[in-house]
Image: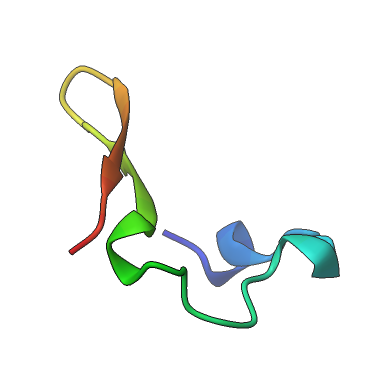
Length: 44
């Protein structure tokens, strides 16, 4: 893994400035490295 892998453009309007309301509605994208599947889940 290289540090440059984490260098990318992220538009300012996509950066969270405040926690999700309600807090239990915060989402997390999960990548399964074995089968390369992507799952969107709730982050507790």
